[in-house]
Length: 169
Image (tube, rainbow, N blue to C red; front, side, top):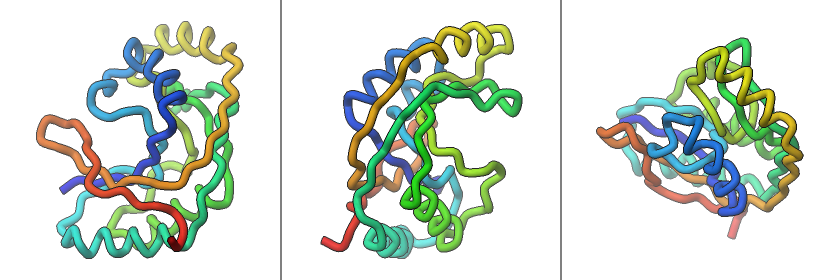
């Protein structure tokens, strides 16, 4: 089964992201706007064992501030445009714990916390869309107190398997 670990931001940020995603993201219908903590990985490990590992990781961290501070792009690697999330120790350490403790391959790219708003654009589309979106004054801050283990369905969409609250409570 293919799993991933994500943070679903507040409805306010999701609504803002979706206002662009419905036009510029072919994955719009497959998963709500999210911040990926652990990219998709395949495993045959028992789901109970997987959730126990993730639960132990969640207990190590307290809720944290998620701050979006601009629109950015992964170009020239690919034509993805995203809301850039300010890196903090909790995000970095969560990602590292998932990489070390879960049965997944090492990430192909450095961890850049973000919420995708456009992807799979042609070079011309990317240039036009990014040129206008980067002028947006995006400033958003919220407290994140949970993340989600998601899995991919046969139709390519993703759904929540389990939700994990941060902290020891």
